[in-house]
Each structure stands twice: as structure tokens, then as C-alpha cells.
Image 1 (tube, rainbow, N blue to C red):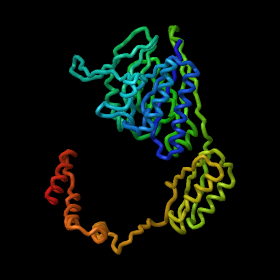
Image 2: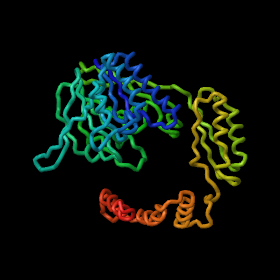
Image 3: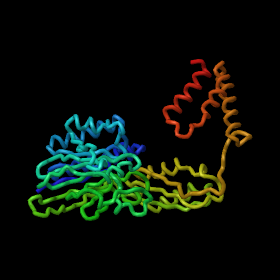
Image 4: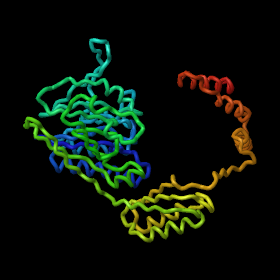
Length: 398
């Protein structure tokens, strides 16, 4: 028997608002607490532990503290990079975690050619108890998918086979207009531990657990909370079947409030009046504004006053979404008589030169003009950048 956790898309450091970032960290802490309490054999983190390849130091400190608890409980962690914490250089803070003995990155593959001269990737196994694990990292913009169509496994007969992938599966993408790996093209495994899509999804033995905490406004509306799976497998069975148990991480209640706005001048009072109908204490308030503004403009809505009201009523945090709020006309509030970009630029340079009188100001128009150089078709970015810098150096005689 083996019992393990299937976790993905933690995205530590993803939220920019501190209260939401704190909740994301708390979800990870709660996940680790549960894993230790359940006395798991191991845990899987299937990509995007971090929201970037180089997370802030504060996030790293908190992450290391949680992995230290796992290590002290003798629960190994197997991990792969995702599309967010993947680096084309191959160097990320996942390496630091591994060198500290907190986890093992199971990405172990080599490129080979078959008898026809066609290239493919051979994945080597990581063995633990009665299990073998294979993994391939996620990459930016789904660039891992062409690779996955050319993957083979270095087989290890007699073990329960887990394949960790951070990618989009064709059966799970729904109507999304993106490339996806065809499930039938993947090598055979007993359990496909998937990450990348922020959904709770199962198809045969292909499983997405969803994020451990929603990563944006829309996900908070759709998911309300995070989750992961604990998987039990009787590896002594002739046909071992994974038994899944969903663990829900309900740290705060989400309260969606939708308000239709037509008059921006009275919208603040309208929104607060809507808030008064609800119990806000301890909740994440999701304010979604819709409609077409007939009077006033967006800036007439006093969001700071609205958020302060919610805070005084005990709301944990208020997030707003105005994507569906339209104005009758696009208003450009420019303190200039002309709407041409060149004239606006000229006026800004004049204002700066007046407020900061130096001989260098004479060079500003030439420098601005040098920055308008267009990148040539098929010109490499590095060559283009160097060309722009060379022009700028000539102007300032540097």
C-alpha cells in the first residue's frame, strides 16, 4: 500500500495584494499540515510551486519553513517545474530546494534518435518503494506539448507507474483555443498526475487536482476555495486502482456581489447600499461591476471609500472587477490641445526641460527619435537592442 498527495499550481507569490498572498501561503501551510497528519508515504507537486522562476525572498523563507516540516516528518516530496517556475536556462529555485534536501526534481530525460533517425525523449524513472515516477516539465506557452508527442519511458516493470505532467490534456481543455496533448499519445502509466489547468478534473486515470488556492478574481468566483487529492493505492493488487479523496481547503468564505451601474455619480452609494444587504464579516468580497455608464465616468466611483466601508464591516478583503463596465465614449483626459502622440511627446519634453534646465535637454529629441527605430523583419532581438544602443551612444558621445 502507498498513500500520497497530488498537489499542483500552488503559485506562491502570485497574488500582489498582501492579504491574498497571506491566504495563499496559509493554504500551502494547511496542505503540509494535512499531509503530515495523514502520515503520507510521499507528496507530488506537479508544477508551479512558485508563480515565477525567481520568487521574492519572503516567499522563499516561508516555503523553506514548510518543507522543513515535511523533512522532519520523513515525507519525501517529488516535484517538477511548471510553466511559471520553469526557466529556459534550467536553473530555478527548485534546484535550491533540492540541494537543501527538501525535495527531488524527477525531471530526468535524454534526447535520442530511433532507427529512422527521428528524435524522441527517453524519460528515466525515479524509484521509491513500490512506485516509479516519471516527469516532464511544463514550459511557457505550451511549448512542452510537441515534446510530449515524442516521449518514451525507460520502462521499470513490476512497479506502480506515476507520470507527472504540467500541461494541457485534450480531454480537459473544453473549448479553450489552445494546443493540447492527446491522451492516447502519452506512454502508458497507472496514474497521470497532472497540473497546469486550474480545474478539478478526472478522466480515467488522468487527474487534475486544481490549485490549492484560487489565483485570481475569476477563479475565486468559479472555485471558491483550493483543493488537492490524497491517493491510496494497493500496490500488491494485480490491477492496482488509485482511490482518490479530495481535500478541500476552505479558509475564507467568498461573497460575490454583482452590481449594474448606469450612473457613476451615484454608484458609490449604490454599491455600499448593496453591501448593506450582506454579512461581510471575515469574507472575501468579490465586487463585479457591470453595465454601461450613461452619466459620469469610472473615476467618479469612489473605490477607496467602498473598500473602507467593507473593511469596517469586517470583510477580510475586497477585490473588484470592472471588465464588464462600459462607458458611452472613451474619454481621454489629456492636458494638451492636441491628441497627436508626437505633440504630446513634444509638450512633455518642453515641460521637463523647463523644470530641469541642463545642456543634456538639447539631446532629448534626438534620443527620442532614435528610440523610434523599427525592428527589421527576422532581425534578432539582441541585434536590434544593440543597434538602438549604438545609435544612442553616438548621440551622447558615450
